[in-house]
Structure formats: structure tokens, C-alpha cells
Image (cartoon, rainbow, N blue to C red):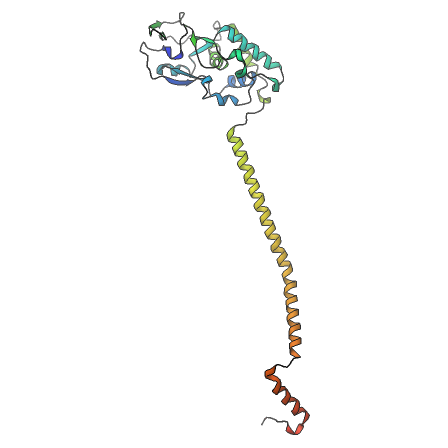
Length: 283
């Protein structure tokens, strides 16, 4: 019978209010190693944070044992061999031709055993999924049952690898798991992997491009206005001088024409010049 993650506890009392815990650590060299050997882009594993492939429902007291790692679910030996085979293939093939771990059909499910660090010695309790029978397990936990989990085996290996790192002088839980951890240590090509384009960067790029386009349109509009202004300023002196010349021409023409109101005064002046006797002088 396969147990679930919520069927193991630190006490013989099991709560119906389970809590959710993320299996993969938030950062570290093993994250980059999975992105390298697992066929992902740089930082693409972040999108798996809230995925069911990275989350477990556990008893409230068990959540604290995952970070820092004191317990870990280890995939079955057959699954570990398939993971190691995938990682070796992705290590030597061209980067664009790597196979993604989440697209390999035979790596979607696995059975698991519960691995515990040698420094953890508290009693563990398991609950039968059907009968509800509770069983106590004491260190070194040799009779723990097998588990079935919704997480991806490659993500489970991330946490399981810490058990090997913490117990380097002890016999490894699995020779295949130890080989995977050694492969993690030789990850030399993560920096050459293309980065994963996040939605935030895409939206930021679109905002930047729209801002640049609006600024360019504003600058072109301003340059058009300035060109119109400079053109009008360049043409205004000539147009004003033309206006003054036309006005002068009108004045010259008008000065040769006797206005009706001044006709008698003009005639009197001519008659005085023609007849000196009639010229009047001021007294």
C-alpha cells in the first residue's frame, strides 16, 4: 500500500488541516544544475514554484523539516537511473537539442521512500490511508512504507541530493543518487543557456518601446512645429518689407490724387499764384 505525504507525522495525532510546502529550495547550485541537465532556460524553474509538480500537502509539524532539509522523499532506484540517463544525454548534446525533464513520459510518476538525515532522531508516525491505523517508527526508521506523490521526480531529487551532501562520510542512500549529485558538481554550461523571458520583462519591454515611440512622435511633432516657426520667422521680414513697400506705393499714388475735400483749397492756391495781385499776405 502506497502512503501519501500527509500520512506521516511527528505525533500520533493527525490533523485534517494540512499545509502546503514547496519541495525545491528557493535557490542554490542544484537549481542551476536542474535547469542545465533538465533542458530548461536560465531561471525557468521559477515558474514551477506554485505548480503541483513542486508542492506537497503535509502535516503541520512536518513542514519545518523540509527547509532546512532534514527529511526528503527519494524516487525509486529505477526512476533515478532514468534521470541519470537523461542528465548525461543533455550534458553532451548541443544546448538547443536538450530534452526537457517535464516532457519525458516515463519520468512523470514514481514511488518514493522517505530519507532522513542521521542527525534527526525523533519518532515518526505513519497513518494507513485506508484503515487509519497509526504506526510508530524509531530511528533508524527501517520499516517506513513507500509513498506516492504528485511532485516530479527530478524536483524531488533536488531535495534528496542534500541528504547525500549532509552525509558525505556515511554510506549513500543510493549509488545512483550519489552519481546525480556528482554530476551536479560538474555543471559547467549553465551560463551558456538562454535566459527564460519572464512576463514582467516582456511587459517592461513593451512599455519601453511604447514610451520610446511616443517620445519619438513628440520629438517629430516638436521639430515640425519648430520648423514651421523658423520658416515663418524667416519669411516675416520679407513679407513685412513687401507690405511696407506696397503701402508706400499706395501713398505715392494717393499723393498725386486731389481729395474732394481739398479741391477748393488747391484751386485757390493756383489762382493766387497766377494772379499776384490777389495774393494775400498775413498781416
